[in-house]
Amino acid sequence: MESELILGLLLTILPFTELRLGLPIVLNYVIKNNLPILPYFLLVLALNISIIFFIFFFLDFLHQHFLKIKLYKKIVNKPLIKIQKKSEKLQTKIDTLGFIALMLFVAIPLPGTGAWTGTLIAWTLNLKRKNSIIAISIGVLIAGIIILFASLGILNLVY
Image 1 (spheres, rainbow, N blue to C red):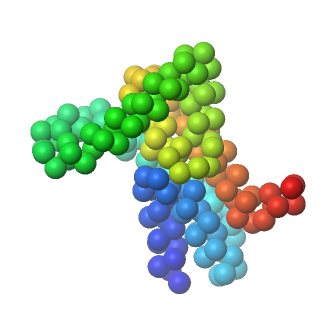
Image 2: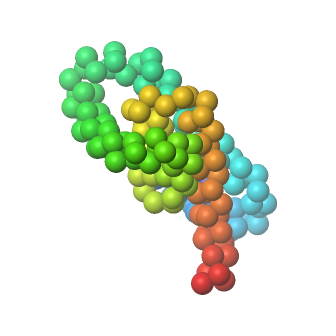
């Protein structure tokens, strides 16, 4: 049973899955074991938000050194180019809406729109760190609430 919890928490910190896949797995574990939802929900949020700091640190201090490694460059360049293209599309919106555009982008609970991509976009566009971290964190919170409600069937009541 604990392996389900560990899997959910691991998926929460991985790119593309993040809390969009990790949270429902954690919630499934919590509900099956009759545990309180709030602490686990907050844990998933904290893990997903903590990734922002790791990504910025990595990109700011380690990325240039790793580009000297052929395998790394081959693996990382393609996704970064895709992110740069997404960033360019978002550039106009971010210029006019800034904080809100980045927050809403991350808040959309779809694969590829989470903390990882939001942080990469902020880094690519050289946005202010503090504002980016706050916007991405709020986006993660909104996405988390949407996923929580959807996982618990609360959104079904609305439709």
